[in-house]
Length: 255
Ligand code: C5P
Image (cartoon, rainbow, N blue to C red):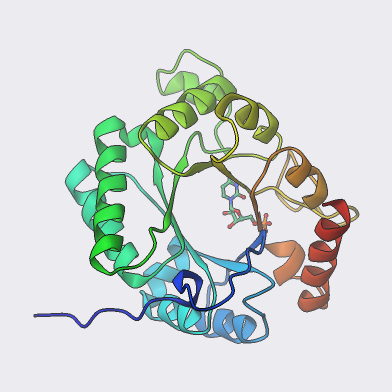
């Protein structure tokens, strides 16, 4: 069955002035209706949106399409990890959906990473749209030294993360997800231009929740982060719009 092409998303249009918001709001809602009601209150000039596995499994691509139609940049955080052909097909589908950023596990290896990159590039060219950013997941921050040793790795998590980020850069990926604590070392090792996407961000004075190594938005950007993934400090705030505006103002002041 021939599928009709998705419209070119706003972030990809050259006839519209583009803004580059630094904050990516993590939409960690169990209920997609609740998530969309929240999105309706946000301004695409103020933030991008991250859609993860839970919402995607529950609701599929439709909410993503609606967010893109409303002008949002969407980071599809599905962390693909499979054989090269399967990952390439999934990346092509995400590119056709019109997402702005997507990610794959660097531990899928060189052949998988190159297949993903080529698939994204080819699909974007077919749609005459800019390529979405393809980002590597290195070592999950939930894994400690004992966990990686049990998996058979002999290096510390930080040096494995650096090794995997270098591999991703070498395979032509656009950047990596990393802790804001690791961002200065990765920025130093990989130079300008390699995008660093950092979770674990907490504005001064806000609750750490279950994050252990937290960094303020200003410090993360100063340390080399390009984009900040922020969930609960915005989604659970008494006034989410004000919480987001305050973070954006703090970044303008620090710039
Ligand atoms: O609410 P909070 O700001 O802690 O949300 C952070 C978001 O970033 C969540 O969606 C979480 O799954 C994600 N994330 C993370 N740490 C990682 C990778 C992703 O917190 N290492």
